[in-house]
Image 1 (cartoon, rainbow over the protein chains, first blue to last red):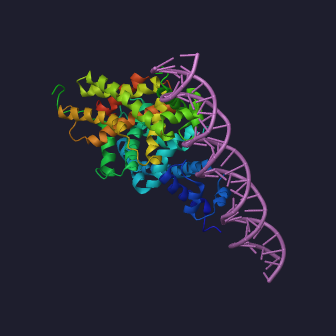
Image 2 (cartoon, rainbow over the protein chains, first blue to last red):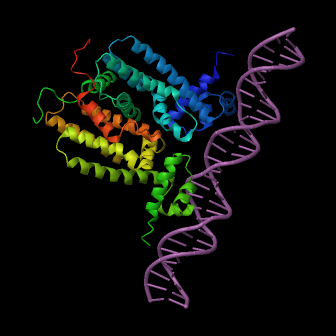
Image 3 (cartoon, rainbow over the protein chains, first blue to last red):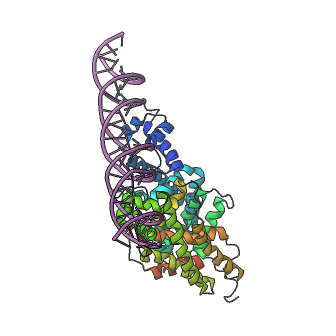
Length: 200
Length: 200
DNA sequence: CTTAAAAATGAATGACTATTCAGATTGTTG
DNA sequence: CAACAATCTGAATAGTCATTCATTTTTAAG
């Protein structure tokens, strides 16, 4: 039967449960219950608990990358591209909150308990920013003395820290669009006030 | 006997073990072995495994806050203060790598498995940045339209993402001083190239 | 050198849960 | 409607470890 698609059902259940309890505290039986299947059924679709987490990373980040790349291709100004990336990244918290929680919390420390696993999808995601910065430098829009390896992390880190906050405690003080604009703005022109000389 | 100071010995051992295996995979017996005490001894000094982790957060972040505040007090220009903060934050990876790993990986997801625990020390740490930004705005050095709640997270996030990278895989491509300068620089004046008009 | 308190020990206990697999159920084919 | 295959089930297994506590060792006092 194709309509039930247990694989997908289990993945979605696992996202919910991992988001709620964290990977280690989540029980297989919790996931099974959430997915409305027997505990044993999970092992027909996944090798073990880690495998479920890895599948979430691979499959879900894969989808996100496709979407973001598509949105960025619509722009031709790197400055706009950064803002679009920012808006997409921040939107995730709103549109797929549970997935965002799992990626925020579990993805980062996955290296610690899954020694062999290299998360290439995640690298691919962050490298979208490198590409934008590189393009900006080629067009002489961005300073040449900006280190791309640092800048991409700075931009990503800024966005991600905001996501982390929102994931931990939703705060409607600033909207997504506003925050995306503000962060890309700071990144582009800085916080310095150019209208007033130093030693004001 | 005061010279042995088991409490401190256990904390230091726990930092090592948590850094190596992560909180959940770390066994109490691992920590005991590392600290050269019996398993049971740990429970004379801590209530349980979580309590060890919380003690690490409280005590070690406390020390860091003191140091950073002291260093920042030496400066009077907010722009310099940001760079000093950046250098301190990044230095942690080099000077206390194992502690940095634990804070990086476990602190962030602690809310997930310790529902009640609010990490006020961590908030206090990040708020050092708010204070700097606020001061910069008061002095009219920083733009007034910068949202302090976003800006402090953006700056902290940028730094922290670099730390995260270094913690995961030490990379001597850029030095700490260089990276600190670069990040505070981007934050202050942005990546835009002012010498060339747009549509270059 | 006692002796009592304090500190430390580590084997035993008790819970917990990922994973397995013998059997049940469901779907398919002729 | 067989008869077989594919899928699913969930109780049983097996291993792991945090925590306890009866006993031993160390320290301090008289």
